[in-house]
Image (cartoon, rainbow, N blue to C red; front, side):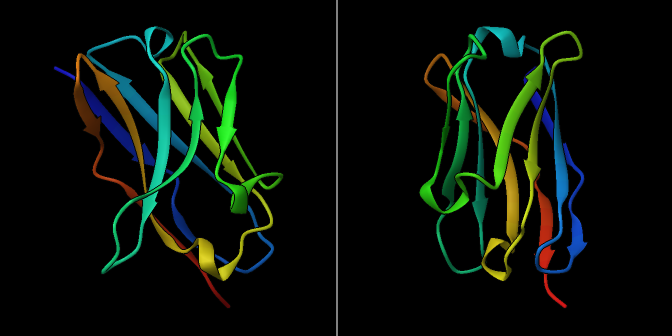
Length: 116
């Protein structure tokens, strides 16, 4: 059974940092590209970052380039999102996701709130 469990969210002041983790089970993250997305109430999910299955190529949404870093640890089957210089507009529920055999999976999400 594919499972994704996000953690690491919280409340942080503007300019601060948070590190999100996504624990994957039921598959190997080394075999698939992994994605982080975020969603705010009343709006659809928005893609944030992707790491390809080789772990070499990383793509970022324009507003997070230079501030967020996606990474992974295949041995522990975890994916990470390091977020620096956080802005109020980064406030959202953050999800990690994977597409396996035409099925999209995501976890329950972890809330990130940026505010004073």
